[in-house]
Length: 394
Image (cartoon, rainbow, N blue to C red; front, side, top):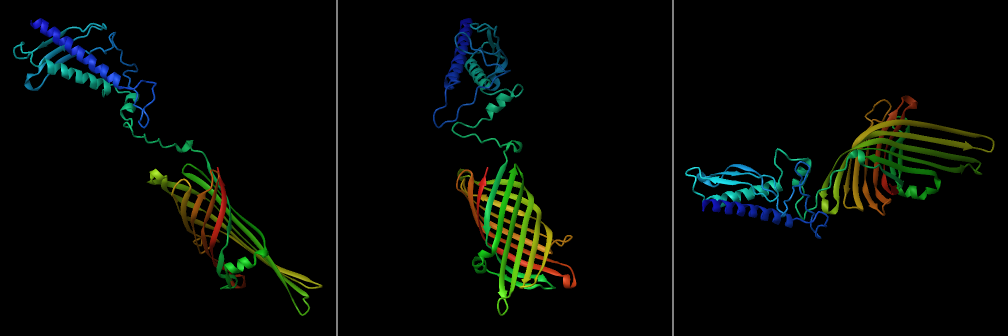
């Protein structure tokens, strides 16, 4: 009777293990079948040693050989299960109670533990034999959740280039000219608008290129204005004044980081550290012409100002963004300004994939002086006003 009971229990345990394994296999989606709508595809079954488990001829996986003790409390029974390798050979099953070798009341718990351990080994790779594929499967995103996209490598990012043409309408206030204090300068928006016909050339251009964290940019503004009048009782003396100014920035920046504010809206904030130099050139000519003679007097002054500062870009969504930039420089280095500061703030609107519209406000303050005596030159002004730009990006 005991022999028949041992055989029956052994066969029952094998059937239970095979049934559990088949239930697990049936619960998995077919390898090439798509995941149901709205659900994340299940991770691929991990491979052990590079090969999948081989099923027996009846569709159940082979039982592993087990040798040791299993069971609750101090009534753990000795267990020895061997498998000869044949698809239909259950091998030999032997159990014994550590006290008298007759009590087989724990056999069901022993075989239940065996099936549980078998399923656990099938689902999770062991710590000693886990492969790269298994680690990837174990760390897969839960069903129904979108896996987080991998961060792009900086070396794999394409160049990002922005080119814009802008119009800046600044008012000018301060002092400029020869002498210790120079002469007062006060040009309002109204003066600029009423004398636009005096502009002979205006070239505002900004170019920026970025690859990964690093970027370079160039911003140049050149303008030239000419005006003339006649004096004298019969208008016999003609006086002309011409002036030009060039402001050229060239520098680089480093993207310190980008932080998500609201990922669902594509909302993020980026911070750049900017550094570079600003080239300043001022020139003017005064000419006097009579019926017999013509005389002109002119001069030109140029200098470079180093500067550093931050820039913050707030991407509200895929179409709109706000930005603010500030920098300070000069510091009296060599022939540079005593001090110079600049603020630029505004917003961008991406009209299409390759073009954008930008509007904002720019203020540039420069305190520069050089020379002594009658050669002393002063340029202490503040230029500020709104601007608008149309740009392309690719």
